[in-house]
Image (cartoon, rainbow, N blue to C red; front, top):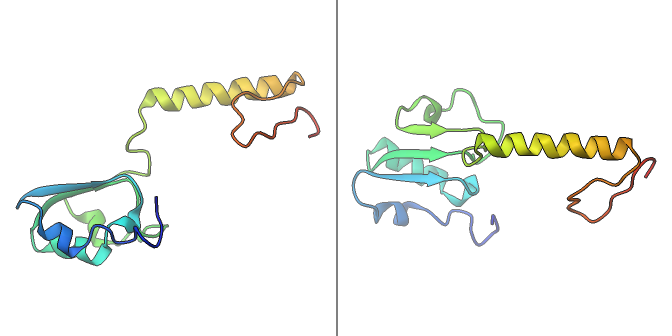
Length: 119
């Protein structure tokens, strides 16, 4: 999780301990990796690659040098989401719309508050 204690938890010191040619993957929270330290490690060739589906701030500046770097892979926070998951989510959404249209409560309610019609 992102908290005051985890911001920058992967910094210059941690990146320096990696073997030459290492690659870093971040699919957690952008700020867990110290942005300046990462950029320096890539620029200096200490990292041979970085893959992420999270960023330090959004929207991402389209002119950001990392987006043009061939050793960097960026996905839109769906890097770990297989196509089957997207299909299943759409099926659940449709089923819940149909349930509510029939006056039934939706399934799999996260916050525990679900009312059919006029709730």
